[in-house]
Image (cartoon, rainbow, N blue to C red; front, top):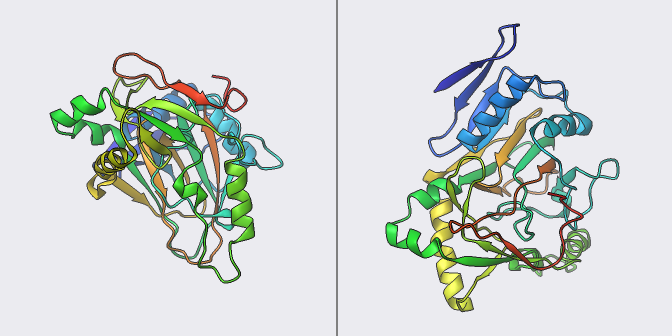
Length: 311
């Protein structure tokens, strides 16, 4: 399926081609950068809201400065991360580097703070010869397809998210010579400041009005439930999100850039590329504090993220 939207007087077209029924589309006819017209930016934003994650091929001309200039047309950049180091040359760019570990776990970016990013932009820098795809899941359709009794439950449910969680704290005890020092140093930095935030399990999207599940690997527990009950319910709901029919998988090529609506998706970096280097650069855009179906905003329990995002 292809849809087109006319741009300026040059009669060029932005093309939008779906790549999966649940989410995902390739956007063509655009050379990304900071000089795009308002009409082009509006077409890109509409494609993002409709398809949740969009992909651009052939953007080899982009560097970190160009990626940031384009990002600013869509919103206000946050710092690279609340705790992890940015690039030395750019405080808004986070290197996603296999040398420091692999993010092969389903998550929504930075849900351990109250100021959850609205949008993420990820650009391929160094790719392995094989493997290294990224998958995304649609948290809006996951909610919409829940049985009515489960919707009634999660509409009133809250969860505590934290940057100190099992996935982040795991140590590779099987490696000869012990823990990988570079990876462990990165993990220690990730948890160097404790953040805990209470989010509604169902948030209302501020632009579309859709309801979306707020889950992923930063969830520690559900408010009012025991650890055992939280674990069982989390897995039931998370399985709904990551059902393969509710996902799209993108095999990266040089020059690719992906943009996803962080308010309506989870993602997973597939670790099937052995010891080859893989590096991508991410910029996140500031978002609203999530709001429940009852109009209640998320609450920070521990940690102040105002340095990360002023919104």
